[in-house]
Amino acid sequence: QNSASPLMEQLIFFHDHTLLILTMITILVGYLMITLFFNKLTNRFLLEGQTIELIWTILPAITLVFIALPSLRLLYLLDEIDNPSITLKSIGHQWYWSYEYSDFLNVEFDSYMIPTNELNLDSFRLLDVDNRTVLPMNTQIRVLVTAADVLHSWTVPALGVKIDATPGRLNQTNFFINRPGLFFGQCSEICGA
Image 1 (spheres, rainbow, N blue to C red):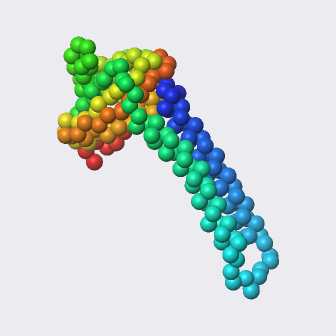
Image 2: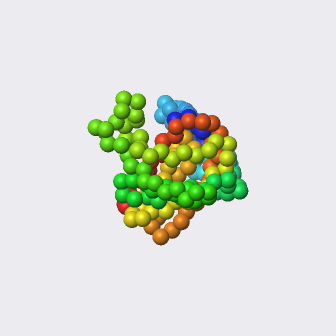
Image 3: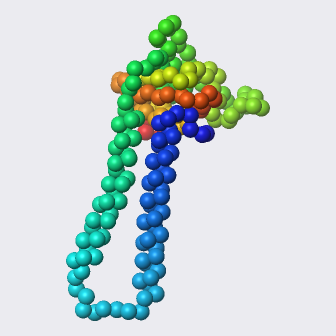
């Protein structure tokens, strides 16, 4: 699914930025390896090269800084909770999720995946559920995540959200949906492992 939140757009941009750096490194190292492999010149008296050693120490450090700075900026953006308008509590169970809206009316419901033999023609196999969670657009949303039995991981990839659900612990995250749509979430780990 395409990005549906500003945070996911930033994550995609960071991925592309890092991939460009890694591609340039791969091309440079490949070129150097091919050049050295087909080079007939040898120098038996070359014992040290302080200049080249300095270069291949400083260049990777600078490269890591170009990856680390955007990564740290994004890490703090993902953790920032900015005055949410609505709170959703998500409780992981083995084979289903429970949701609670407690801001206005106290609404609780379970959300089970629809078995393959009960799917309609327009449903999505292994993604569609019987009770969908509905959230507003252009609003800061806070999600409280916990588990009732074993470890889970609540994920909505289009929103750039992934958070662990641990029994006895309440984790929180937030996101901002900037376009309407149907976004699929799932448990992104082998639950209990």
